[in-house]
Amino acid sequence: MAHSYSGGELFNEVSLRLAPGSFHFLTGPSGSGKTTFLKLCYGALVPSSGVVRIFDDDVRQMSRDDIALARRRVGVVHQDCQFLDHLSLQENLALPLTVSGHEALDDYANLKELMGWVGLTSRADALPPELSGGERQRAALARALIMSPDVILADEPTGNVDWEMSQRLLTLLIELNRMGKTIMIATHDLGLIRAAKNHVQARVLRISERRLQLAGADL
Ligand SMILES: Nc1ncnc2c1ncn2[C@@H]1O[C@H](COP(=O)(O)OP(=O)(O)OP(=O)(O)O)[C@@H](O)[C@H]1O
Image (cartoon, protein in one colour):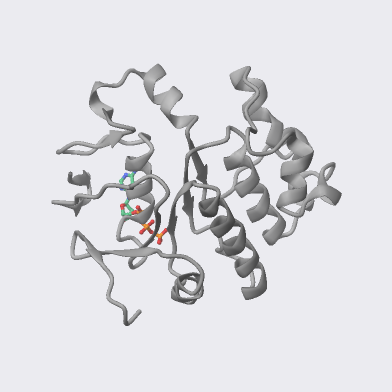
């Protein structure tokens, strides 16, 4: 698969399969294409050439409805964690359930349980602008989990938080992987990757010179 924007080719000859239950890190310099790669993985972009399959289906052959259905199985933790500022945190998190008319949360009995899991019970009624950076990051993770996804793609989930909070978020992501979820984390933070490797078998991929390369053990 290859992808270009009008500014030029970002990567070519990229080939990757995210095996169910695997844990991957995606790293590379700023602007190398990490966010773009994640967008290709969840069907927000189609590749300029080659094939991207989401759960075995070729994105190009999928209707918008097919992609929307597949997207329910993929939780995305966005870099900029956008929330609706006039709704409480709890209301924001419930939105995907309301919009889809579905009751997901299979791994958690209810929204309260999920909020407890990410340590945000006491902030349920807060408005998003009232949350700290770390609370927003945990809220973004919780929102990605509402539809009980099989795969979690996290774009810099520990950006803008201190080391202790990034460890807390990492612990949550490792716990999700132990529950059987497939995880891919795009990050600049090599310290985070090193910390993770003490607890989970993770492959580290690096976008470099328009290729996706397996990073060496010397990270
Ligand atoms: N929609 C777009 N149209 C044109 N160019 C884009 C678009 N989105 C991203 N780019 C460009 O593609 C390149 C890769 O962007 P991307 O956000 O994927 O990189 P990144 O590795 O995630 O960067 P960072 O680490 O800074 O978040 C950048 O040069 C960016 O300006």
